[in-house]
Image 1 (cartoon, helix red, strand yellow):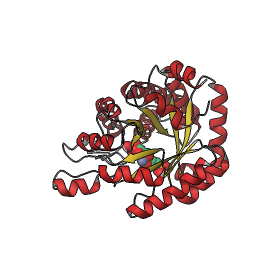
Image 2 (tube, protein in one colour):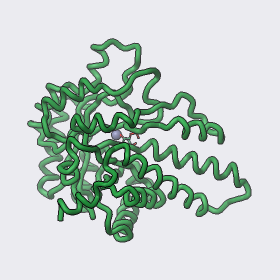
Image 3 (cartoon, protein in one colour):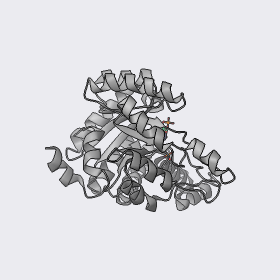
Image 4 (cartoon, rainbow, N blue to C red):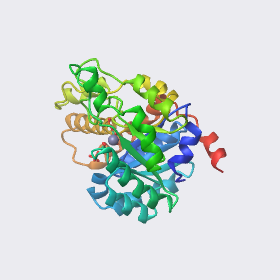
Length: 315
Ligand code: G3H
Ligand code: 13P
Ligand code: ZN
């Protein structure tokens, strides 16, 4: 069943976070649904602009509709990840997405608010919810001064004004993470002090953490041993997800980790079975492995086991 992220956040706020997982194809979709059913967890499917144009935007919609039929127990939101204004309107008009992200974080504070507000007005008219972003995502290097680091992170005082003026439903905050497999060059990590200040300014308001893949070191080692070159890859400690959830983070974005599972499975499979040229055996291994990955991640997020309770809440 497709719901809005608002429904999911109401149930989760202050207790656990919902995993927001990017998909691009059928195998990821099957693994994602299986893993969430196995762990009895609600979830968010994220579709990026790149994923929409990988084959055809209608293809992913069709795959998700089919998965919804195959797994009638599943409760999930369909969310546009990092949308620009035009893509947001396209998704809002499609009637398929229950949530969109407008990412105008690269604009000035006032322009970010103005763009976000236009998208919010269009989305709310159709009962679709909006995630916005304030602050600059990107690893804060170890050598930078505290002032420099804080300039990149979300300013808690601005966060409140941003939400009030834009009318957004959730806010992606920069608290030290970055996208991709190379997040930290040293011992940097999440800035819980900044997150706590944001929550003080916005009590009860759902916050979002992007760039939250944990880049498991055993996965990186296996990829490198099977011919890859991901030296120095490092991610977020997923034992910190629960702490973030207590401070108002209700959505945690994970894409890179799924790509690592895909890369490891395919590199190892074709190394071990060089005579094979059939796409299905390796596709099956990936679906199983991705499902296991999702189920284990949901335990770290705290969302595992909450499906039945959520089904009652929204019925
Ligand atoms: O934050 C970006 C996501 O990881 C999606 O990546 O734009 O390459 O699909 P993509
Ligand atoms: P990762 O690159 O850490 O998986 O982050 C994904 C993300 O934030 C998608 O919006
Ligand atoms: Zn992101």
